[in-house]
Structure formats: C-alpha cells, structure tokens
Image (cartoon, rainbow, N blue to C red; front, side, top):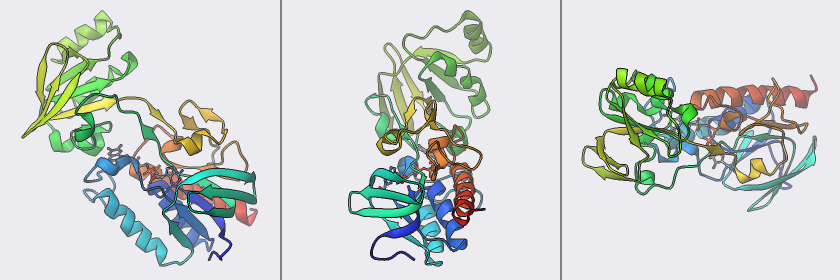
Length: 295
Ligand SMILES: Cc1cc2nc3c(=O)[nH]c(=O)nc-3n(C[C@H](O)[C@H](O)[C@H](O)COP(=O)(O)OP(=O)(O)OC[C@H]3O[C@@H](n4cnc5c(N)ncnc54)[C@H](O)[C@@H]3O)c2cc1C
C-alpha cells in the first residue's frame, strides 16, 4: 500500500473502464497503484451503458462505483479525485503532479480517454448521449425502426450511413458543408431510400424526439447518429508521445514511445467501447506488472 510520501508502483491516470481494469489486474498481482481521476468520463452524458455483458443497461456511474468497490477490497489501489497536470522523470522514477499534490511511481498508465469535439450547433449538447450519439451499438436499439438522421463531419464518413440501415430504414443524411457527394453515392442513397439534406443549424427537443433544422428544411427525428473529430486530453497531448493520427502509439504490450509509460483505452484506439477499453486496460495491467517484475 502507499505511504505518506505518495509512492506507489503504478500511477494510473484515468478511472474509466481502462484504468479500472488495470487497477484490478495490478491489485490481484499484489502491486500498489493510485488511480487519479478528474471525474469527466466520455460517457458522462449517457444514462445507461450498453453492450457490456453483465452490465448492459447499467448507469456508467454505477458501473464505476461497483468496479471501485471490488478493487477496494484488495487494499492495493487508492482512488484519488485529482487531475494529473504533468508527468516528468523516467522509467522507475516518474513524478506526477496533480492539482492536489505529487505522486511518485515506477510506471505510469495513461487511461485518459478522448475528448469529443461536438460541432457548436444550438441544442446538440442537450441531446448528446441520449438522442445524439456516435456508436449505434450503444444507443441504436432504443430507437430502432424510427426516423434517424446521420451527420458525418466529412465526406469520407458518408457511406457509413448505409450501415445505419441495419437499425432503421428511415434515414436522412446531413451532408457536411463543402463536401461533394459523388453522383454514384447520391444514386446509391436514393436507391436505398435515404434522404439527403444540408447540415443541421439547430436542434430542439420535443416530446417524442428531436426537431433538426437545416438551412431550408426541418426534420422530426427520433435520433441523430454522428461522426466528428476527437482529440487527446491536454495531459496526453502534452507528453510528447509518438502518435498514430489522433491515437497514442503503443506496442503490443501497450507501452508508448516513452519507456515505462503505458497507455490504454480510447486514447489508443478507434474501437471505442467500454468493454474494449477494459480489455485493453487489463492487458496493460499485466504488461506493467511483468515489466515491474523484470520478466
Ligand atoms: C455519449 C457516449 C455514450 C457511450 N455509451 C457507451 C455504451 O453504451 N457502451 C459502451 O461500451 N461504450 C459507450 N461509450 C464509449 C465509452 O464511454 C468509452 O469507450 C469508454 O468510456 C472508454 O474508456 P476509457 O477508460 O478509455 O476512458 P473514459 O471512460 O473516458 O475515462 C477516462 C477518465 O480519465 C479522466 N481523465 C482525463 N484526463 C485526466 C487527467 N489529466 N487527470 C486525471 N484524470 C483524467 C477522465 O475524467 C475520465 O474519467 C459511449 C461514449 C459516449 C461519448
């Protein structure tokens, strides 16, 4: 267990599914950790989490509380509600400054998730995580066979609209401003009964759904599927790590370009679901443990 000098084997930055899974794995390996969490998970806006066997339909906050309670029983991990501000030092001698103190550890795990960059359209934030979402597996079932919109941020993402027909045949695609829809794609949309409109300029809730307005039309919809850019947290972006586009580059053992500094969860992958994040976190926990053990 840690001591008054705030020394642990591993500092885990981020207490979402990835960080929690790593903390559990390390605890069961008899290694000490601190889980620093700033309290702003990606799925904070969602009332229920779906697609995680055993936890389908459970509130994300409840999932975290259950996981923390289970990890607490081992008395190897501490949960500290602080924001990590920077990581300095090197393998075996990391120093993590937070808004409430400083931690020292031999390894660090970045499990800080990603930031979704929502387009600044009036009304979108109010429905985000409920009737507006990225992941149809997470939210689609509740609105299946009802009218949906699909709003990608660039023309490369337009064809993803065809996949959404798996959930509803009543689909309007909001084409991003400035994008060219090739005639072949236009024709395919028409053949599959998909309507095309210009980008939303405002969104309003109404009792049974949402009203999405584009420049010259208004659509009554049940849900709005979206694709838009994401970015790393300020902490992760400021570490000088090698990246693969938006994502932190890791090797097969989840170690980043800085020796001793590992990463897991959404910050490392396009496969952004709680179960996937937990699986990667568990893998990172094992790899960190082995690296501490020198095997
Ligand atoms: C609206 C919405 C709904 C979703 N619904 C589902 C669903 O139903 N099912 C599903 O499987 N997936 C869902 N997802 C995806 C899921 O939320 C993510 O895949 C998952 O949370 C990723 O886990 P993570 O541990 O990588 O990151 P997160 O869960 O985002 O956790 C990262 C944590 O790091 C903390 N943090 C960040 N920076 C710092 C710092 N500097 N210091 C300390 N702490 C920091 C944050 O506060 C946060 O708590 C949803 C996503 C969104 C956006």
